[in-house]
Image (cartoon, rainbow, N blue to C red; front, top):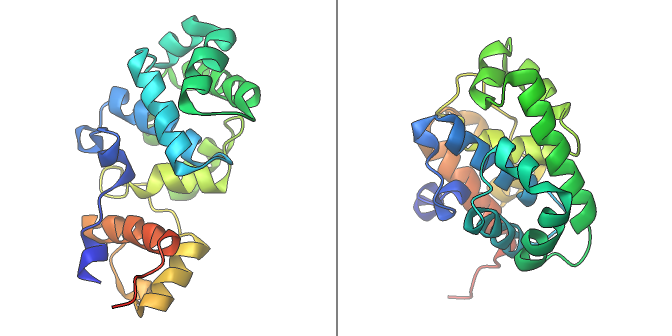
Length: 196
């Protein structure tokens, strides 16, 4: 269990520093969370995020300026998309428009105007193509950064915790230990334990 509590976060693997709590880093994580929440492998999601990074498309304005054709090819193609590339590109563009129109491009503003954690999740749910999985991915690594970020652990996390003999209900969810544990449990579910 100690290894699980020291798991590396997905944002850390991508070089995103959420502790800065800056709009730039938060938008990068929102973009990555959208990709991780899609019906693609983690590897393709990470590769696609890196393609956005390579082309310096890490703000809503830059993505909108690049346009749909550029997102489909080269971004999605270089990321490894073979399906859903056009739909995902459309979703990302619409979400950039929404973020700019409703929150001045600021995810920090979105958090500030949310009344509580439920309202925060409801506001995120209004973005096109964002559902419970994407919301959970985005907010779980922000637990220690945003006061209103406290999503319920996913059922797969609870199941893996039970399999590991970990009682999540006895833990403080607003700690980095819990955040790392969630990431570790997600990875543990995907990686069968080797026989000793």
